[in-house]
Structure formats: structure tokens, C-alpha cells
Image (cartoon, rainbow, N blue to C red; front, top):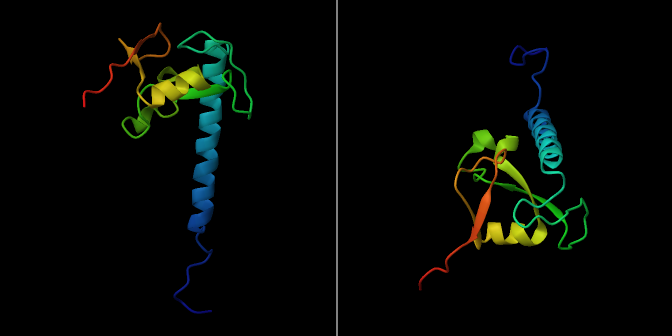
Length: 120
């Protein structure tokens, strides 16, 4: 054998990335499970009963990060930074038509307001 190879062979980087993705998915699913139990399958914006479904319907369960995942990556899997919302409210939150006001902690009461249209 040649001396330039190290034995045993190092783990390929692809396997490391796959393992990291699996761990991230497990953490996200655990976060969602905690959030669903806390919010009792009710939209935190409008109070609508939501359900897990693949169909695009108003009562579809969505999860919304109160803090952007890129802004606060350390809170990505933190249940106190994620809320349960219906499909309609999630669209409004994503487009900043609806904005949470006050302290952004999902464990406490949240209040939402219609965003003011941008001047232009």
C-alpha cells in the first residue's frame, strides 16, 4: 500500500452532511411537536382551528418563526420563537401585512396588527 493514504479511511463529507441534515430535521420535528402541543392546533393570529394536511386550504397548519432564521440562527429550533398559524395568516406574516407587536416570545400572549402600507 502507498503511504499517502491514511487508514482507516476518513468518513466522506457527504455522509457528514447527510447526518447533519438528519439531526436538523429531528430537531425541527421536535420543535414543531412542542409548538403544536402548546398552541393546541389553534392559529395564534386569528384563533382558527388548524390541521396537518398537504392540501392548500385555509385551515392548513403552518409554523412561523417570530425571529428570522437567518437573523437569529441560534433560535431556529427554539419553541419560544415559533408559533402555529393558519395558511392565510402565515401568508400575511410572510408578506409583512400582519405584524406581531410587543415582546416576541411565543410562550406568552401575542398581539398582531395590520401593517401600514408602504408610502410610495
